[in-house]
Image (cartoon, rainbow, N blue to C red; front, side, top):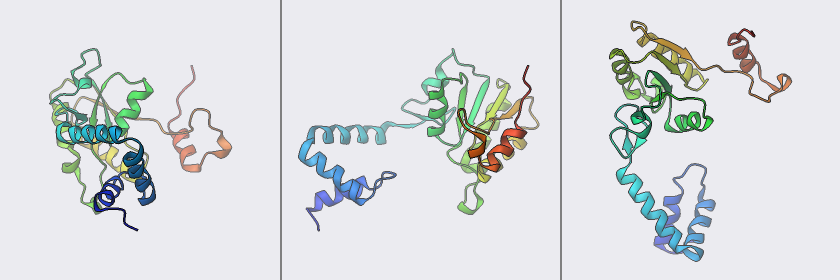
Length: 199
């Protein structure tokens, strides 16, 4: 059943969000129309502003309204330590952990030749250019532990081999609070290969 053309278009627009099916989008649209028009107008304004003004940092490619983002401009951060991630969401996850005080480089994906995503689409030449300037001491590759993420990590390491920079990979293994009997074999293999000495 169709309610009205504008309502149908609102439901369709809300359906583009990840994890939002037609029923959920319909519930959202009807809630905004029936109970929170002011909130709906605020949502529309913020969405419009973000789509219009948010771009990418010229240094790290994270989302930013300015040419250089707040993280890259922050001189209290270790500018010689760069964490390479697949997406802005990954950078946000690392930031929220509170354990990293360097800067980032966002690939906006991973190598996937079948999908037409190669080094050019990931901006790896931009990363190599940053390293070539000589200010970076270590690159921490924090791509996902998938086949594509591992291939991307190895490609980055190979691309930076000629430079005097340490290229490291984040450890993968048993999560904090996890139990070995419930951990899959691949994760355990990563945990054993990434083991470190207890002093």
